[in-house]
Image (cartoon, rainbow over all chains, first blue to last red):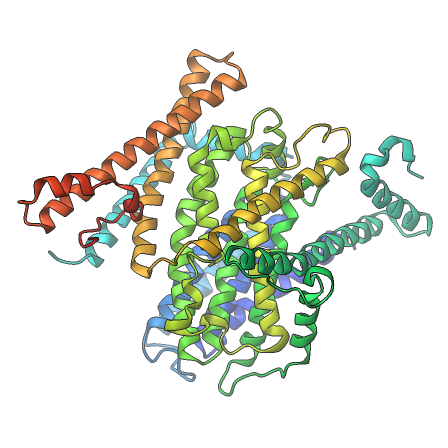
Length: 166
Length: 423
């Protein structure tokens, strides 16, 4: 077994265990901290795949922004920090169905007989390639711009909703 | 066996490291494990160096702060009080280790560890010399930003798990401050990335061999430095631990060496942001003969870092602290727009120069960029002056014309906030 396989097994185990803890922990702050552990180990998996940019973005966005926002929201919300709150609501059958469908589709994908070999890429150039793809008219400039406009609209909307009425 | 002549005296550390790898290999350890072992040795030595630095910088800071305040500072333990930090550590080790009742034990004990981790790991991408870089990762700048986010989480964990309202309030303030100041910091960091055409910190240093980015991007350098000082929560931005309001803030319940770890985090972080500023804007290890003798690059790097660190201590001991609402409006109404403006101006100038004067020398580029930065700053201050004047005229009922016009000097209005009641 090579070193990267050992690392993969360790990181994969940490990811799975912390992901299970996210949904089983009764204390919401603990669940949020487990979520951070999960997201961080996914970033490590990206590193093991030589996808450094994805790993950095994963940490910056999911841990640096979203997880902190979640923790902040949990801490500022009344009475959700008490242990022993209900872990399910009336929509659990629907959630179970969606989870089962997702599991079935992933299992079907993993059952594919032959995995196509990916072309090897020069990982040192991947960021500039990504940047060019996002900015060139032949690439993904339209989706990129639409996503940017959408985010700006969301930002303005959030300010309009939260702002003081004059 | 690696040949010493290939490395020379200027590169002796790398030679010793290669020698270690050769020696372990000669013991019959298989090749991949040799890589693992020498990498671990490098990680442990770098982290140990980073962790030992605060022993010196705490003494330095106390001595400097004392001089700024016309005192002597530590002078009893050892020559010039140099052993003061050791005495402090021994005192901390002897203190009772308390976990408060009702505290969340795991999170409470984990938090200082995460805090130290979030600072020590930053040293992985700081190039110490041309041949001594922990990790040449091509997203180095993003890595720095991501790791700073972990520090915020550590403070959050410590504040929440202490089961103390002052600690929790301190943690809330921290998050408001750190998350807000991250925005202009990230935008300011994009300017050296733009100038170097790379996010690799080692590349950014190498591109500065002819000109420091401080001269090409003075606004970005100043913004990065100021927002980093805010990120480490030091005076004038030390609202995370306001004695008169929230006592010691997030680490109020910590005792003994766990408190020592928070202190270590703070002092090491202060030194680390000095190192990052020196790396990204002051040319890092660049200097005369630094390429031929990497050890000399290490010396230049530390000289520059200590120079920036001196400014950190200087501003800490001379500026009054800033109020929380001013802190946030300074960030959102002044730093963030200014950082975005600096980014746009820099990219515009770069584009125009690449289009019409592609053969311009580094000097010509620097002069143009510097002039563009000065013009932007002048424009921003003019805007602030105007809005301040208007606000003042409104506050005074609009009849006191001449008073309003000569009161609007503009230099207090750096808070991006019209001082309607300033006089």
